[in-house]
Amino acid sequence: MGSLRALLVLGAFFHHLKSVRASIETNVTVDDQAPSNNSVLVYMPPMVWNEGAGCDFCSAKPNESFAFDGTWHDAAYNPGDSTAEISISFTGTAIYTFFIVPDMNSQTTNLNFTLDGVPAGSFQHPLGNRTQFLYNVSTFGRAGLENAAHSLIITSGGNTSSLLLFDYLVYTYVSSWFAINCP
Ligand SMILES: *[C@@H]1O[C@H](CO)[C@@H](O)[C@H](O)[C@H]1NC(C)=O
Ligand SMILES: *[C@@H]1O[C@H](CO)[C@@H](O)[C@H](O)[C@H]1NC(C)=O
Ligand SMILES: *[C@@H]1O[C@H](CO)[C@@H](O)[C@H](O)[C@H]1NC(C)=O
Ligand SMILES: *[C@@H]1O[C@H](CO)[C@@H](O)[C@H](O)[C@H]1NC(C)=O
Ligand SMILES: *[C@@H]1O[C@H](CO)[C@@H](O)[C@H](O)[C@H]1NC(C)=O
Ligand SMILES: *[C@@H]1O[C@H](CO)[C@@H](O)[C@H](O)[C@H]1NC(C)=O
Ligand SMILES: *[C@@H]1O[C@H](CO)[C@@H](O)[C@H](O)[C@H]1NC(C)=O
Image (cartoon, rainbow, N blue to C red):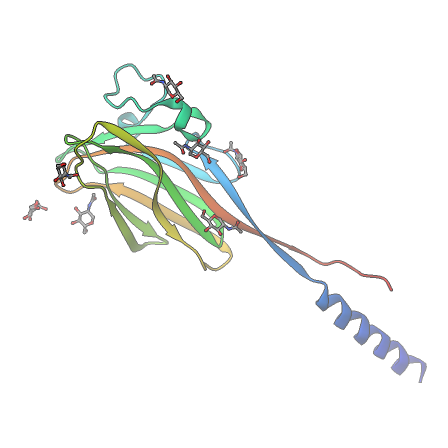
């Protein structure tokens, strides 16, 4: 009798425990300057990428005060060059990438995205009439991923020239815990 009662109490306890399990989704921002916020960024080939803010020889001169954390990574791709690439590792359920994009008649941005080894999308900004930069431009977003480690690879290759100004990414991190709610 005593042990049955104990089991029933234990069962009620675990039932109760389950009901207070919580999971919280948090968006984490990762600046272009790796490593930060538990995400890993690798720029390839390393010599074509420059820290854009304060870069005297870079042709693109966006206004630092509009960039996240005042920084971005700059690469120019021309047909025949090695493919310019950013490789991102993160653990979570969603990812969003943001670039500074030229809205000009001379330069544009073309990107391909590969998520966990599978082509996942592309971004093209058409040539514009103006001579300005667009900030916080969303170039890729994917939610509803399994809460696990993922890799996102951003590439620019092929036969179109591209100016790449990578500013930051956001990913969604999930944390969960048990809380024992004593009556
Ligand atoms: C995270 O940011 C994305 C993009 O801005 C937004 O759509 C999403 O709702 C945000 N998620 C959370 C949990 O704040
Ligand atoms: C880390 O993420 C937080 C929350 O989004 C953000 O405020 C902070 O600037 C990020 N740190 C870096 C170095 O990107
Ligand atoms: C950058 O933007 C800020 C805020 O609008 C402005 O005060 C500053 O003059 C700009 N800098 C340049 C170099 O245009
Ligand atoms: C872009 O977003 C960052 C971070 O949210 C913000 O600090 C900055 O002012 C924004 N820039 C523009 C031009 O909206
Ligand atoms: C450039 O400006 C002209 C005239 O304002 C407009 O008709 C055309 O659509 C614009 N082209 C682009 C690429 O924005
Ligand atoms: C994107 O991928 C397609 C298909 O492989 C390719 O034709 C195109 O050149 C790529 N674009 C860029 C900017 O790398
Ligand atoms: C280059 O682009 C042109 C026109 O967009 C296309 O017809 C051609 O197949 C491309 N060549 C290669 C090698 O991708």
